[in-house]
Image (tube, helix red, strand yellow):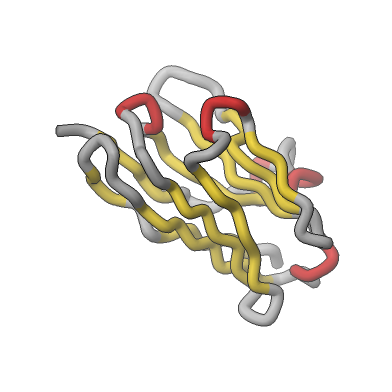
Length: 117
């Protein structure tokens, strides 16, 4: 059974930093691409960053240069380092396998990130 547990969110001032973690279990983590998504109130869930099983990364334009996605296959964990946070980064952040995007049962609880002064 696939399980994804996100952590590391919180309240931070604009310009601050947070590091999110996602612990995965129930599948062979090292062979899958992983991604971070976010969903702001009243908006659809959107892709933030993606990392292939080989470590190639992709970022949406709004976070390029500020966010860094990484993975530790030994720990079955994917990370999202978020720097220079802006109020518009406020959302619930989720991790998942891109291949499972449409599988509603695959999503975890997410972790809330609030950027506010």
